[in-house]
Amino acid sequence: MESNSTTWMPMKMIVGAFIALMGVVMTLDNFYLFDAEHVLQFWSLFLVAIGVKYFFEGRLFGAFAWTFAGIWILLYNFDLVHWDIFGFWPIILVGIGIVLVRQAIAPANGSREAGSVDTAHAVAVLCGVKKSSQTESFSGGSATTCVGHSLVDLSSARMQGNLAYFDAYAFMGAVELIVPREWRVTSELFPFMGAFEDKTKPAANADRQLHIRGAVCMGSIEVRNGEEQ
Image (cartoon, rainbow, N blue to C red; front, side):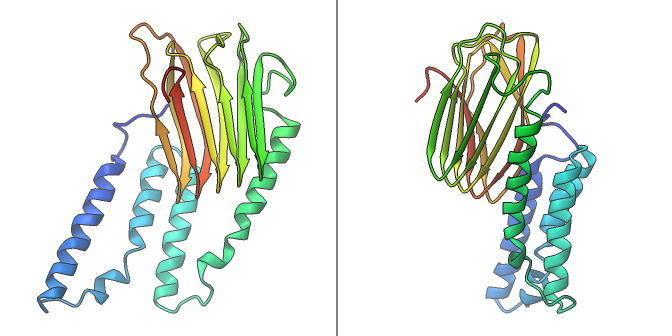
């Protein structure tokens, strides 16, 4: 699915409305006109709103994760459940393990083996890894980082067709991807307490598309062009 900034509701609108509402509530509380506690216990509905946004965009995994987290925290605030959601954080490790196994069995794009010269794959666990490709028929790749740093340099690569997929996963680490200016970047990522940043400046005649999929948790995924530092 192609990333689209004009989808159902822009993320900036949701975040902006939440911040503005919190500002109004806290201001009224400071002047003893309103008890902020009555509203702040509903703050997790902000997470549910993000989940609804992802649902209407067809990003079902993100929709489920954000909505589940928001509803669970809301129930916890009202003492309807007695387990803090942050106690489930090791499940993230389970997810990372599943991702690594899946990539080993069925590499990104499915049409090439992980060792193919037409793909680029990097896995960094408690370390730093740098991979590069100069293939004339790039067909896909992946990068998975857990408490480390992965750098995949595709600035000298050329795409086989008009579209290729790149899977990126970062947990308490960073994934850095360098692409040619002839490629346009779209993304379908699930960020949780992490960041994705697209710094690319595609050329006016860019006619290739690299679609980035994956997730980032307490880390970062960055994509840029080769000439940027």
